[in-house]
Length: 257
Ligand code: IPD
Ligand code: CA
Ligand code: CA
Image (spheres, rainbow, N blue to C red):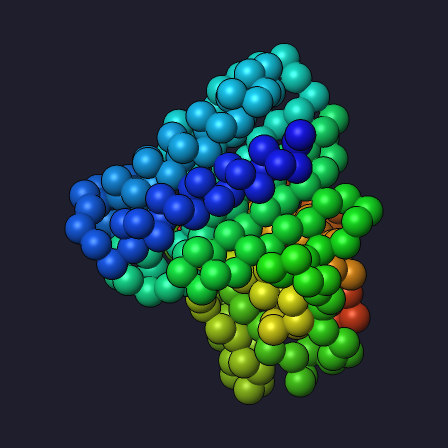
């Protein structure tokens, strides 16, 4: 029931995303000029929450646009109704719906659906990760010097000594390819499927990383904060890799390599 509700909810949100994609919709700014919310984000969120509430009216929900729907439950849903909204608003097909579910503080299931590219990623704790129902696995590269990485930048720049631009510059000055796709959930899934060897971002929200982090772990990868400590959706820093380059990536981020 939990799995079928998660799949249905991600499909419903994805259906909404696709129906608006490259069409006409209202766009407004949130915290800054490029932190956007569109009519489609709100419609996707509404469809997702309606399905979850119908099946599990007593579950806790945290969703980007409506915030918390507080319930006294050990189940908590993390919803990003459109991750990659700037891409979506520009007709760039790197956008998705991301939904994670945790039980008693541990991620249990995650779904990330990009309906434009027709890619549905799913993972369940202990049962592996899939892309369109086929098992996926992280890459096997063992060194950052030949890795292909991906990152993202927060809407307002974090002015810290090892901030996003500093780490980015450190890596690209050494000729290491670092891409910026604009959807953290997709970045994570592309690490899980071996397209990238690692992903890091300094300031993510729980709904950006909850589903994707489990998908990476279940695909054989490792997810942590920048200290190497256990991932939690409540942590802002996320480092996700194939596992093999993880410790080296921590040194690159800290500038101690
Ligand atoms: C954003 C994307 C982006 C990341 C930002 C997020 P949104 O989410 O995941 O890749 O760099 O930090 O806020 O606004 O498109 O849902
Ligand atoms: Ca997001
Ligand atoms: Ca979003």
